[in-house]
View 1 (cartoon, helix red, strand yellow):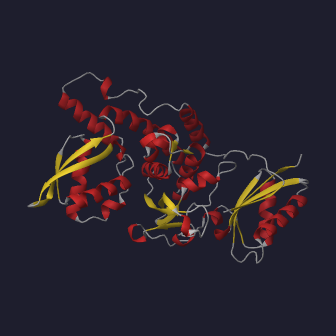
View 2 (cartoon, one colour):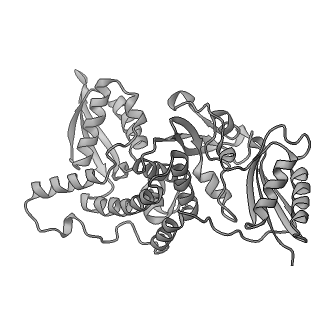
View 3 (cartoon, helix red, strand yellow):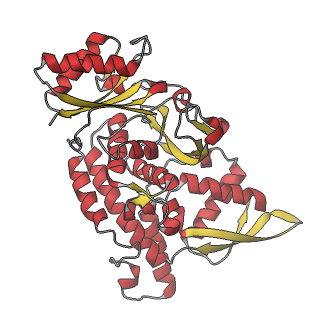
Length: 397
């Protein structure tokens, strides 16, 4: 990633359009920065009608706050016996049982299945860990003893607050195509979440970004999947390594991001990286809907574990922000200069044979002069391997 500057640049205007309503809602909620356990109506406020009835009501309420058609990529990779163990684990956790028996997998495989469940189900943050008891004579009959992060009542409060966010995003994307939905959720996360690991365990779970507007890369990826599940999009969380510098494979660190299905085709997407790039300007789409080959410039992952993404990025073409020649970029800048202070675009690899930054600045100067804008300050941020650039401008003082 490179940054080039000529003069300076003014802060850009926020994203406009249908997302505005969602952003306004979420900012008001998130700016309050309330703790996860803020009191809201829940099971503990209802009249007591017996422990068994209350527990069952709580379990049903928790289940009702999970999407009916949640995409579970990891579950589908299991054999029938392991799928039974997966379901038994989930049922025991949903019921907050202090211990329960699971059949169909040995203790080692059950650990793997719990990891897979966390990837499939972003709401699985209430299970901290579990211990196991088993007999060598029956290795696939295991007693599970879970430890929970919270009570049922506390979980319900958190899930209801997450559901408030999901419902508003659902309304914002109603009637949209897959790519539009994916973009709205992406923009929502970029505009409202701050990368922060100093907030305790919720920094690593979906509730961190959705309730407290803060979290690390894994929490951001899981929060995106949570919203995608609620909006009818297939999505999975990818765990691997990444670097801030394309091609710097010696200095990679643990990272998490997403694969999202758009019109039946899977694409790579890193909301955390776009969130970081968007801090001082417009929403960036450098890591939005990429192929495996495009993502591999600065990401590594176990490809056998995840859906292969072979379709190239067409987002900028669909937005009309893809230039194959000097004339096309010139017209693009002229059109953007009429009512905006920035332009994000992608160049065809053959568009420029020399230094892309100098070429872009030269075209931008010509474009501004043609629309009678003089003494403009410009800055350019470039994702060189992908030929994605963000040009920003303002009137010189």
